[in-house]
Length: 452
Image (tube, rainbow, N blue to C red; front, side, top):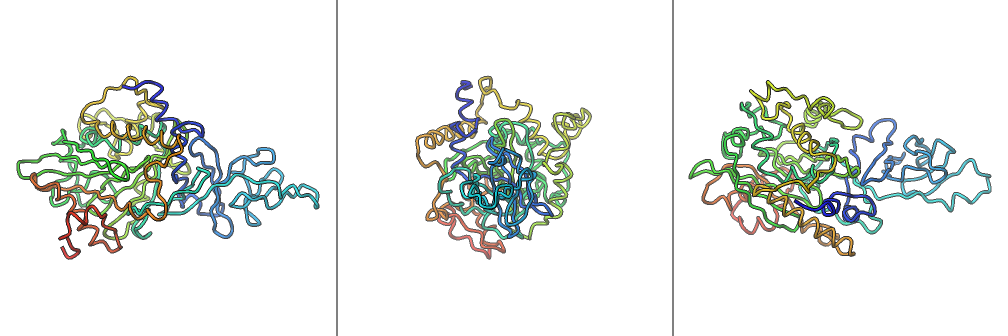
């Protein structure tokens, strides 16, 4: 348990909140590129408790500006795209992607008012199907050389979904290896050849055992947690027998991301981005090390659950997440269907908008959550005191963070420590794009070649 003061410290992300100061040291996913396709590329964006407008001008440049017009506060999300910028529909004031005022047409022809007006604007970059914004006000950090950023566009796919709770409890599901054996338990195994695009449905590497069977039958994992230069590495071990152990390697990517295996050929890099204190979006980049991503299929699968334009789940608190007691008795542990995003959404939203951690009781299986909270408090203190928090890189050190390694496979009970590295390195060296091999892995398994 923790005090209410401590809970507020690690959850609240407004401009003046300590965790808010930390979050503003990082690039934040602000919109999908897909959202700005079409005839009117303007979308309202609420991010870290503040209101903005994202737009693409006639030259194809992206801009993020404060949502209220600096004239009299009208809503720029209803503006017009013309003459090189975004024009307010109230009096026609025009702003470019850098916030410069280009025109104040209602003013006298000789007026100099426009020269003295500046709308707050924020840097925006496009990476792997996501538009990233930096709200910090100072020089933005460099992006680390993560696989999802290095892979070509043909081998990545981006999507998002709304969750109606605080970002921290949403993130903590992703660094909890034990919950998958219960929350995502299926009583029957599906054909693993039909697992494309579905989490926890494929067979584990070097076996024909479906993940659903492993999670169901081996529900007391040994969890190892290691601090890394990018956050935390988690290794969950489920011993099958004296000779074989299921090994799953995932990573917490500071401050609010994680990297997990989806299948032998694909990983998910996901961020839980605060909309405000009580709502967040998950943004995910799916990265393939094999064939190009079937983006049409991936999108169609996800649009079965998420409704545009706000990417809201069709199964939610208002309809009890589709809960079916008969299904709970015979098919799934939750009775909430086959999409694990619904399971996670129910779990974290049911805690309340901001989880009351003064009432929780953590166990051994929560060791990664304990370590992450310690790390979060440590880095909040750095940010508040003017220090440089974890993973705020300059261009010189951006390549020092590569990968990170993930895998899901069945290896030797004695020797799993190098097995997971070998699996990851083989996949990287066989990829059709130049997937970097993290230095740590290259040093420990130098014998693995692409031919293998």
